[in-house]
Length: 513
Image (cartoon, rainbow, N blue to C red):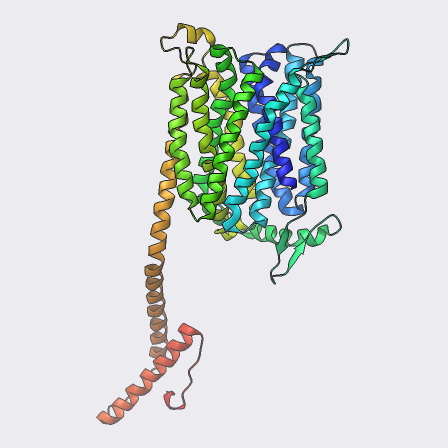
């Protein structure tokens, strides 16, 4: 319940800030470049804080890291609210930047939610559970436009400072984060951990030591692993491809998140309310396909197949985004590519998380730090979040005068076609994993037989060497005595081979040399 409520609150906060941020920045004297920087700062701070929360959860559980991150995010909402009270220009823009940095620290707790699922949910149920949590976030996105409509009516004058539809977003952020804090305090329980004997212990406020002891022992074991083993495990394709997938998913989404509001304003004259309604409405499409993913996953459809379908749709959607977003397009021309892209989101997010979790569980040196590894995956999303907006604002999003002067009247430059190329690159990586897994399903048996034959030969060779050192002199007196002597040697050879190869001794009174 706590994770569901936290996800809904996080989505509402996102839907309230994103459509109006560009207008808030410009009203405080900011530029388009500063808007891109502020958009990036949120993900940058989230990127920096996620490994801290991940390692913290491995060592001390989930409640304290959750509450700390939400407290920081609440402070960010307060700074966002009061930024407009400062003089326009650097003071106000600097305050908005600081607010989004603090908010990003709070958003880093998304890694904690996925780590909680990875640690406390059976492997075969993780895709369904992750999809359900994502669906709850979509519910928050659907609620967001209604909150924006409510905010648009706010206009209270306090004399020297006014509460407007733009700065009142900070007040919404404060209220949402306070609600999430209450949910964590009341509902979140520490997951149960199995110790080495198979017993389970449950942590809580009154039993922190017993809850964290298994985690600490696991963490200590992981640190004992050599750097080479950890690096080799981390650089395997089944780890790197999900990282590329989560990066691609979020980088491509930034093309919509960063570019939609200014492009729709230039072509259609849409303001934050219309933009929020358009983005919020696709949440129903995402929710529908979330249900499809959950159903397919429960029926046993492989995560690689789900991810492959999502990547194909993503490639088509972001290609159409470039061709359909024109100054002469209708509202449907802007909306339909977003709707198609949104239909691919459920096939990209949860299956990627599940594939990554399975890959981590398959590697002993990484399995014991599941929280930290989930933070690394979320950091891949954050990298896209703080790198992509600035690049999109500078290279992919055309200025209104550039659109007017162009022949095609497109709101996006050809650089935006990098988005479908990233989807295709990820698709190649997934195909590589599928082919590798099929080969591994066939190779182990033959490899095992080869290794067994090598070990047998080695054992026989060592036994022969031992026998050669103590080989008795054999006098060929008669054929009968020679056969008897050779039989005793063969018996000794068999006994020693069994002793070396199997760890057992087959002693026979009549087989001594």
